Image (cartoon, rainbow, N blue to C red):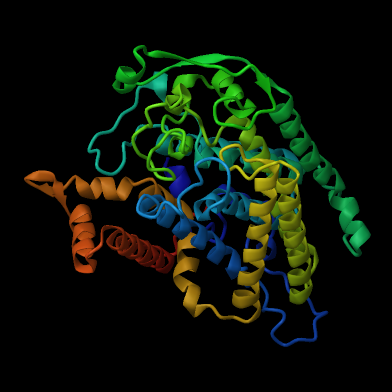
Length: 482
């Protein structure tokens, strides 16, 4: 585990997934801009080796957003994940992570001395990241308010956020190593020739996903309901009637079918987001008691980071690669802004058109329309940040986000996965409820005379705290990125 966290002085300018790899020279590492003499604008080109600060800011903003929606989503259901169809603020977090990983790969793998060595290192990092995600989200750490740990291996959750990122990273990196032609990009046509095979793979991933999603027959199936709910149904084994093809509803979709078959019912996420739908909760779009006529599938498990949906999620990394390639080959800042803007709006328009054609936005399924609209939003946000931070050099207002982005993995593990709050709650006075974390939150709620606004204030303080921690790590020269 220490190999993931320890970053030496020579490695500190490379992201976690890509450190220790001499795949490119010092002027071509991730988040660095290679200068060009073709621009006439004095502020258009930075000095050699200046980092692409906007990429760190984007990464930090994503981590801060994750903390916000995870911790304040219960008080503000409107920003929490959509129960099934639709897009909310929380539904942009995962695509943001995948997109920034793709951009980083496009910047790092510009020159590769040995494809075999690069492949071995990518495989090793994929395994490390997957195992770290398994440890953090597999159920071993029980999180805030639960001062216990440990997991029944027969019920461990195989998939999760870092596992999905590792899959996208693997596919995008392999394509960058093996599928890119070694030609000089001196024209738009040369740019297309260099990357067209990679684009075809991206298209095939989309086609495979769509064929499986709409083509697989989903038969009737059964599951074991939690014993706490047996009073409502009378038996632990519950039957779900399907016998359909092409359904995107919670009980009968191909995404859940594939996960149940390959991963197993007990290894899926046990509190799926569709428990906040109107069919499953009287407090929809929030969690709540089940209505009297609630269907049995409301108690069934479903993994929002499953196998088939991760196939489409990997496409987000490929599209992030495209944005990274633009940085690598187009040196004028405004040219980059133009190309990024065109690409972003093309994806946004495509996403909305697909939604109108009957492919709804769904984060749990990671539908094609959802992938397009969230990736387009990712590209547009990066474009705005790039113009503000790297072109106009307005950096002081976002320095905390920059620090957080440079240590995204540490903050994700300690804050978003609740390791730090859970550890802090281990020190309490007489009762486990009397601890510093709950006390601070209760104090803010009392001061603001509101449960939800006090919760929001607590989360903002939490984000600022982790921003300062990241700043301290920055001062010490420690960088551990996603």
